[in-house]
Amino acid sequence: MNIAVIGCGYVGLVTGACLAETGHTVTCIDSDTHRIAQLRMGLLPFFEPGLGPVVQRNSQLQRLLFATDPGPAIAAADLLFIAVGTPPLAHGGANTRQVLEAAATIGRHMAPGCIVVNKSTAPVGTAEQIRAILDRVAKQRGLAGGHEVVVNPEFLREGSAVQDFMSPDRVVLGLQCALPERVMRGLYAPFVREQERLLVMGLRDAELTKYAANAMLATRISFMNEMARLCDVLGVDVENLRRGIGSDSRIGQSYLHPGCGYGGSCFPKDVRALIDMARQARSELDILTAVAQVNDAQKQWASGVIAGRFGHRLQGRRFAVWGLSFKPGTDDLREAPALAIITDLLAAGAQVCAHDPVAMPRARREWPQQWFESGALHLSASPLDAVDGADALLLVTEWKPFRSPDFAEIGRRMRGRLIVDGRNQYDPQQLRELCFEYAGVGRGHLQALRRPEALAEATTLAA
Image (cartoon, rainbow, N blue to C red):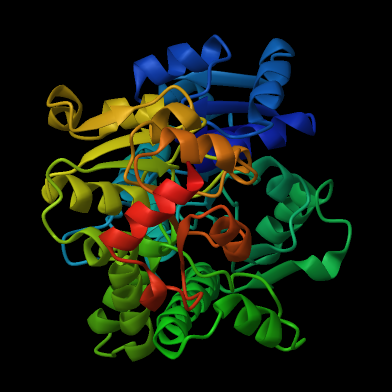
């Protein structure tokens, strides 16, 4: 088939490249001329493991093309995907302007019989708006209406998106008649061998399914973060709690790891959009409102530990931060907990030295330049360089290079001895034996943090 994908962002590029891998001719369209020029040279606009080779291979085979002019690719397409952003509005709802503009563009150029598939995460009722736009524009062109629209939400995890697309645990299709179902089943046949993993439902059902899935995962994370707070108060280790409840087959282990809060392009935005969607329907989602509140508070956990240990005025203090992206395997900084933590530390007068394996180039472009220009925020070339002279080390993103560091060398380089483990990666007993102070999320150690005179004594012993 000839396929066109509008949007060369995360979802659009992964979708286009993976469909081209199965032999389709795919044209990815984007209005960003610089992005298209980079993609034609085989350069990706973001970091995603395994995607580069797929893009380069299919580009060389002329199965994956890139364009800024939408007209020719849309006119030639049998199947059209909308994969543009739906950023949050001020009140939390999803901004569907780009989706509806894409629908209007498609309507001006599409051939009769072309099927339009929306992969953008959009509120319930958006597919009906897309169809109305297509029919209206077709009427203006003197063509028949009744266009087929499919809702095909994406469930790609940043850091494993290619694997998720190639071997999905389920494919959700929202549609209303047999023809698009046959086409979409054929499209996904190379990826879904077990037909029960391809779920067909109504348009609105599929739209809400996407939001509900992300909201459920966010709820599990916020639940564990709230349990972690209770663990600290009661002197309980949340890791034992996690293993205890996760061994229940009804609960399972996934998304039960407490941390510095969730971030990224999906969970925060989609939870807020779902809350707003409910309010528009004159309903209230009390649990999800609490989920969002817990997550906002959890992003202050690490800076709260620092304030409790060193006070609220941090002039003359230096802190190392390991990890900037919202999760390992990506350079995505959207809603990253590190941004909230670093902002708090800088606002209190501290100096921050940070390191991330892949996100530092994006951090330089997207974070406030005055942070770098003033010298308050420095991006270090290596994890060990970041800890030089630091009063404390904060682990924010659990990248593999941070999992088994040389603590003896870290101790020699740091000025202080505090490690704030925002992902519970380290063994508290091991660090105590090395004369470090340790604070993990819900590990029952916050009350045991030693005061400055004890810290000085620990430093002397370590030397």
